[in-house]
Length: 259
Image (tube, rainbow, N blue to C red; front, side, top):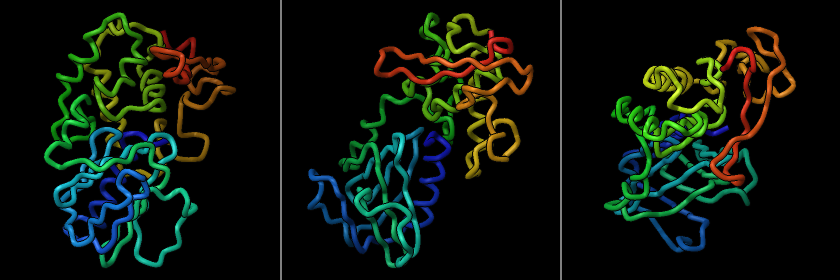
């Protein structure tokens, strides 16, 4: 599932393949920007912030968000695509590389001088060079009655944690998803642990929370609705939690290890 570490790796691949190179082809398969031609423009930089990605080219920035199914592939010319052509939403080419964005949940072209406005609502980036633990703590604790699960998922508080990370983080920290933020003893320590989880996984293609990368052994609770707790063997519980029914996300927890 795409989360902050996935996007960080995508930005690195795009940076290595495109940055400093002039585009020889651009094909944006979104009606609003279908006539845009960036050929000859240099890719100046590729940035990630949480789950968002910016490719700055000339006077514009290409803003994308993977959502649930999106992915960026970067490869030499002539390499067969690993997804069907009809899923491609953008193609960027340099003399040596081709970058293709498939099934991107958000794809838009912004004026570069205003691109920061599109991401201005986001909280501190957990994998950013300017990660601000104090500011993230301030934002998360601003609503003490909010369930900690929702506070951690809210990208306005901190950017990069998704459903898988939050469920695993709460298990490791012994917290029920429904525990109000105001009842969490040390929110700052919780966020620092979340940042560490992302950081240690950012260079891995196989994400793990248990330290075991074998298939089926990587997670404590997430996606294990029929499993038992790896610590106490209690049957895991599942549910959903959201600010509205439409935004509800799946929750997984151990009723014995988390309180």
